[in-house]
Image 1 (cartoon, helix red, strand yellow):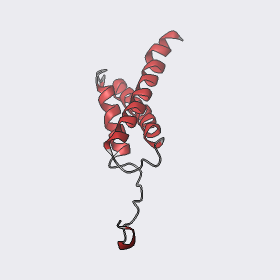
Image 2 (spheres, rainbow, N blue to C red):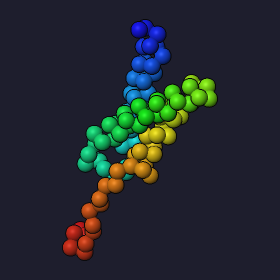
Image 3 (cartoon, rainbow, N blue to C red):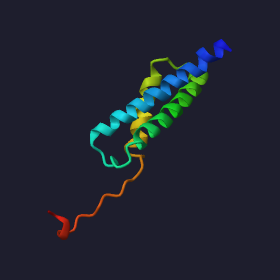
Image 4 (cartoon, rainbow, N blue to C red):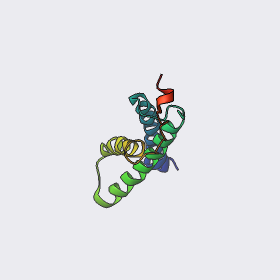
Length: 99
């Protein structure tokens, strides 16, 4: 059981927490969505878990290096919170509320 913890559970927890941290940092970029601040770390957490799964597949098939995991986490979180992220409706500006 201890080998399984070292092989899977600890790197999974580290990737998930790094994803949540990266998602929280992504909130500081000023993108819309600050009215739902919990969305950023949760999508970062899910991005970290997904990046870990992608990394495990790459390790099993191509013997990918360990240093690839943090890069995959950052790329996954960027994709999920950036171009592929949730579309947040911006309030339309009308001449009446242009104060």
